[in-house]
Image 1: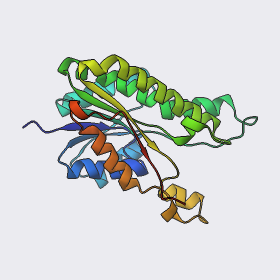
Image 2: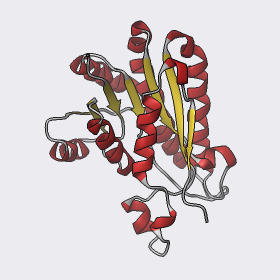
Image 3: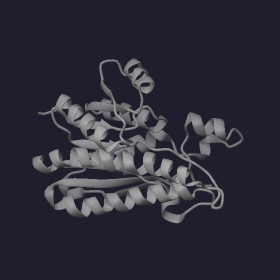
Image 4: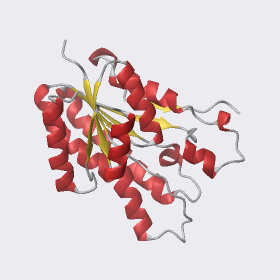
Length: 231
């Protein structure tokens, strides 16, 4: 059997690290996308022998060229996991246009460019899977989360639109929603007074991503909301 392959963007992030481990344990061959050379070096150290590249996914031409080379080296791509993302908080009257653009870059344009780069190959093969990571704020808003919520909402709407185009051609597109804070080192440092046991376990997000990526055409899942423990 041909080994399943996946490209993971934002591979150096806290959540992506768990996703890399989950897919590796399941026997997938992975291509990891780092956003800069320092992250690429760290990924190569942490995942010895795994295919790792640095691609500026915000730049359309660099994203197209880099993803094309990565696809060539992998041989084929069964899944694209758009995990690259970032968070920002700012009040409605204090938010700058630069902050909005930065959130659109990291949360929307990275997935927009990466998906457009791999989608033609999936459509030609008549199969494939694309994942995006949404957010609870994108569904209901959130105080001082305007740029972040707007960027995630744009991502969700775009991916759902893509799915409406490609589902009948064998490509499934799904969105995973962490419905609360995730237990990461960054969140522990930012919120030292909060019990991390009340947050979402990133391993559960990784398990959900793998579950979504491995559904058959007769049991497709388009969305999955992952919640923290009940209060």
